[in-house]
Image (cartoon, rainbow over all chains, first blue to last red; front, side, top):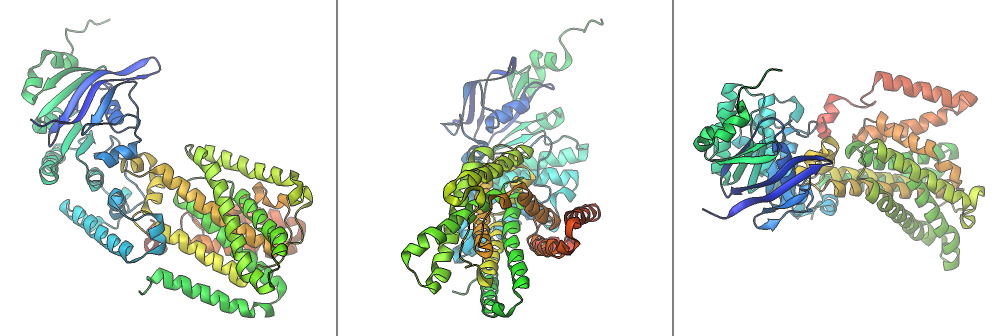
Length: 260
Length: 315
């Protein structure tokens, strides 16, 4: 086993009097397909938001590739190599599909505002190369035929895929997927599972996904972390999790609920 | 090395305005005055378009930045220039552009001062802060004796000519266009579309907003310098909230975030306000009614057609 790529130790966040996430320890190893599950309101998305720097943990530490991420702004964390998608798709709706991906390549650009003005040969060459790479990435996922359409005009499934492609363009070492199967039908879910495996193998990155759909989670994750009311209650392989009494209790209730 | 097409167009426009400048003396002075005013409007509207249109912020302080540039450059040409004993040609062709740039830089500095703390705010809040900034500038100018206080600043040499106005307009339009038409520049549009997503894609959204704000303020400052040396007289009252709104209207009518539309709207609205002078007291009423009608009939902007938008890459 390799060293953990992402490590959360004793991570806690409080919003006023509410402790949304309470001393969670978790880690994701390089190239691993990990899952984060839990009933509604368990704090899964909050954990994502802390990993990506949207929220700062009240206590505890998060480190990525051995480097603590405390105090870093979200764009700095993306620079380190963590990219994400959102629970409610957040594309750049008025930009074209092509530009949605192109803009995410920006981290690996040498040029900036000044070069945009001078438009010298180096700038031109880099732009040509970037267009090429954008086209390449789009064609891997067969979205090149709609590349000039505004992102908002895509079908729901294509928007989800575009969001993943856009995240890949930042060249992450870890990809966080927030409920990628939400709103998909069974066929689309099967395709999504294939897609996630394909991305991991092709780009050699680790993936952590938050998901409600048990079939998807159990089907692709190698290791699963379970949250309930902001606490971690279990960790293990899909089969281990499936049989864990605490997890069953969290999802189905411990004893028959008394009717009041 | 052969420059790219956009730069060749820029050079061509600069050459054309130099040629026209040579014959502009034969024009009716009133007509020339309106034309130069329209050109200054292009500088103002295009630069505000970068902030309000492309980057999706809402600044109401453009007149404030214009005032900073206007007073700074006018102070240079009225107090410093006479001591240097330069020839008329040197004054018009070397000292004047330098003072325009100095005015622009000071306005850009004001842009950093206002933008750095307030661009963390969004939407309406930014509008209120910039509105406050504009008013503060006006009140300060009204009370500083060195710049004439509320009497205004007089005796500014009329260095502004056709070349400086339309040259500046061409440079402004080029800078805004070139900034946006690059992978780096698509970030401005991404910030306008969804700031959270932009940040998650590794874009320094605050950096983008400040860049837009500072570049916008710089050109507003240059426009102020041109205005000062066109009118020969500056009055703090001329840089009020109304002036900022006038520029915002140009950007909205041109279709927020369209290069060509905003240029046309700036030209058209300047000429329109001029031609409405004949209606006397009814001028502002007619103007307002026209704006209401335009907004009702073409809320997407006057000059927005599907064909154009595709070409400009902004659907």
